Length: 414
Image (tube, rainbow, N blue to C red; front, side, top):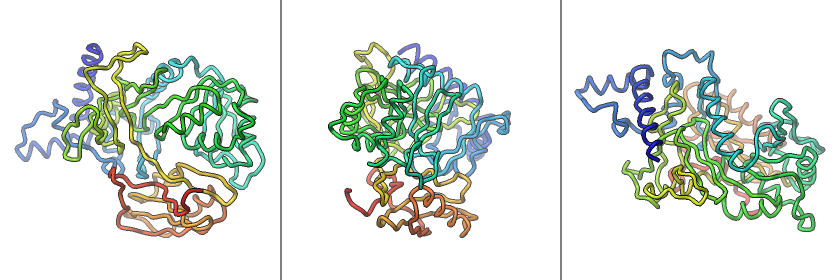
């Protein structure tokens, strides 16, 4: 732990210095403070402001260091966990480091590697929505990967997904929690447990609840391990074989704060604030991730696994409703329809009935009927021939946790 602390302090000093002098957004921020007579030191993390997603969304290139050329960087598009579109840039070196950590802390902890055949359940359309016969997946030979569509999981398609997992001899899966849980629920009791080559299943993008873990493990007869991270690369954690989430110190420094900005005590939940250490070319400092988290005792990071990485007790990420289609499919994470290029601040999908949807949009400058039509079309491509009404609103109602739900269902439990 002491070595990690020394390394983080050195890396943080470098990131703060680079942000202060090379990143337009932060340089202008500190110049304004100096002109106002503020002599607070930028070398102290607590003196930096809390950064909201909206500020990054409004002018993302202002957060890229001026000695970088975004044309030579990887551009990541993400809607994030709150439906707010974001544009991010990362260098090849940073991307390699991120994937190296993924390999070391996720796959190798559990005895698998990227050399083995593996599968991923994701929200990108890989076959037409109307398709009712397999395959509902596509093979990525370069990555030795099978990409499964979460848009086609239904009672009538479940046997085909299970057979594909067997056929391709996949040793591990990376999944949206709710999507694989929905698939597991469609497997008949008489077919349990599913026999395959699976050694472990990793969940991402959503919290993993105990009832989901139990169901998935009982169906697929292998352990389920939770991971936590985001496209912004400001913090990450992964679960060890003893069921404890461990922070990745190289990725970022985390703070758990209350609504007033004060640090919460261990064992209490608060806003997750993170300062990225990995991507110094687009540094996000004291960035509000948008999740609530609970931090373990910082003075006691002992774990039966023997690793000294800090322990994360719990992440209270989003827990959205589920969209149900007429033919029984259950869809999750449809915020993928909110293209980062669309002039919107926030958006929400409301399922009023099996055949009627409302998309609530908080428009930004430049919004017009063209974008409304594109949004409606993108949703119909994923849920079928339904009526879609795009409604402009001034704001979207927040939950008790200060976030709004991306998906709201009026159908009740089905």
